[in-house]
Length: 184
Image (cartoon, rainbow, N blue to C red; front, side, top):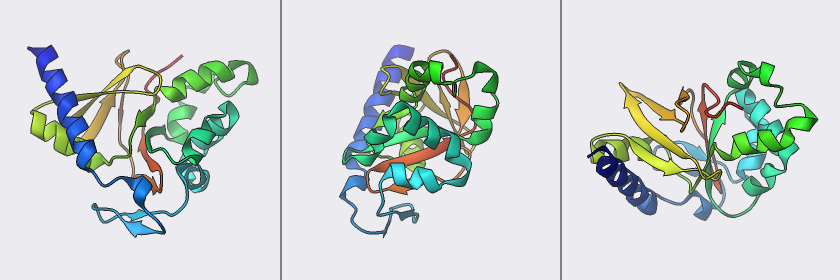
């Protein structure tokens, strides 16, 4: 029964995403359906200027993944905050010899398509429970609500909460989260 509920939740999320206003279609700075401003810059550019996301921005540049967020395809980045990366500093992901591992970790935080926290919350409500999505790293993340807080859990059980307003750009969104989902 749980597997059927997860499949239904995934289907509901996919349906929500299909009807969501694609951020890639935006030209100039526009207001999203949630009332938030969508920048006319790419997600890579916006991340470089986002105060508490400088570590993930640098990590994307160091691994070459920033190019993904400079293109026209839409993605959603579950972006660990600087504090989230500081909490796993002992893993030494920033060391040059660990770039491949860092790239793997980051891919497990990237979702296809641009969507908002409210899109995911609506899909959870419509499905009556958690919804799953597959990341760019071919892992599954599960979204659920804890009261009013959106929670995302990785395959290994590590969870994070959406911790701040999203960064919205022409080709995607970054949702700041308070933990790294996949620890090396």
